[in-house]
Image 1: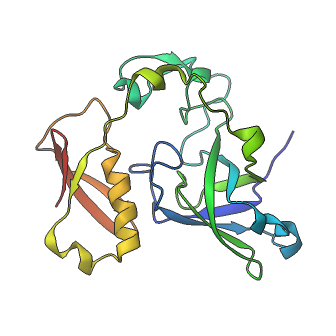
Image 2 (image 1 turned 180 degrees about the horizontal axis):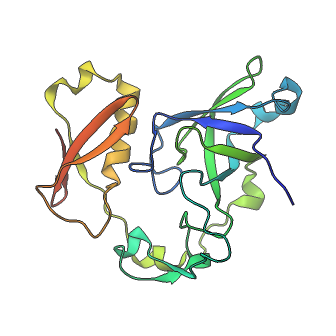
Length: 220
């Protein structure tokens, strides 16, 4: 089977570092799905306004595809500290045989004229190819009270984010809220704990510099 992108994703996140590790954890983060020709027809979106969420099937375009020869059966999830290995099919690691991602995102708005869908909570970088769009249906897609493997026993601890006083001169309130949610998830590799190390992350056209000490992330 050959698949081709039907759309491209536009996001303030231009690189891998800083991308939320799951959809929905940075609920204020906005992005736009731009349908590509020949799929950019208003009729293709007819009825979508009646849904609140979408499933996106997309490609890990910033990761090299290992193929069969480079396949690794185990990965190291950040939630397990980046050291413990589990099977790739028991994880949501981006390093997968076919490099396909699956994300549920909230619909914010639909522009039929330009065939664009604004969404919130996506864990996709700018320029990510989207291979399919499907509506989220609660009765079939939501399963309350089920087991979630290692996630159930390893709570992800968020960080307190401290901004400089003049940060409001650089971002509007909604963009700043999205940045705070992203940083609170601790984008660092989980095996790095040097409080003096300064990290850099590109967001909305600006380079964000920060360091982390204990449970506090300070934007420099």
